[in-house]
Image (tube, rainbow, N blue to C red; front, side):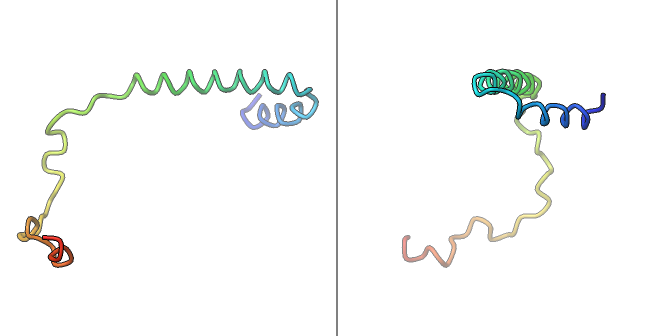
Length: 74
C-alpha cells in the first residue's frame, strides 16, 4: 500500500470511530509524533565556536557609529 492509499484508508475509517476511540487515536498519534521529535533532537549537532568564520563577506566602515535616529536618546 502506498502512502497516499494509507492516508485515504485512514481518513475514510476515522468517521466510523466513536468519540472515545478517536481520543485514543489522538493520544497514539501524539506519542508517535513525540517519539519522532525526540529522535530529531538527539541527532542535532552542537554548535561550535568559530563555525561561521568567513560567513560575513562585507561590513560597512561606519558599522559601529551611532545611528542618527537615536541621537535624542544619547
